[in-house]
Image (cartoon, rainbow, N blue to C red; front, side):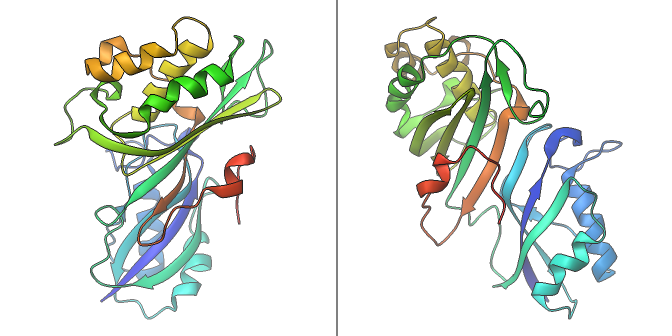
Length: 262
């Protein structure tokens, strides 16, 4: 039995999220059916983390077990032949039997996109939150500094508690702007349900001038979701990368506003 690791990208617009749901189109079911068509086996994928309806992924990680003799590099073309245009396998590799895409993940990097201006962007509408207000990005950056490090983030978790612990460590948080496009890069050892989107909604309230930057620290300490900002729309969020044994190096990639593919 082989264990195959896949790097997958998808446009989450027309999916009801990652996890299989009866009567709904999901990334998991779509991918498992494509792999099964190649291997002629019943396939169950493990994933680094479930994404919600409308959320996109550039670097989702999946693993599955198979008895297929197909060389790993040929899985890319073979699986893609059975996938719709909004999902693609970018890489495939044999990994140790013990590898689990979810359990072994050391952290994730998410990006959230916004378009700031009075006129909404037609061609980016699936991938950005259109914000018609002026935003002070420097204030949003300053307000976000108190989120760095290890904290209990239950103030940014929908339906707390839905995990054994709401303590997480944010290792990177950076806002950037290029013209009308504003984006947040955030990396952590793990994220709670809707955590990134709640953080974005909270920091946007600071950027709009509704709240002083100091209020974000108060929200963290209060451990009360009702005190934080709104949950930002799903379609602005993208899972950029998951890392395992290697070190995460966002580097110059975080300075580029485009949706990178290599």
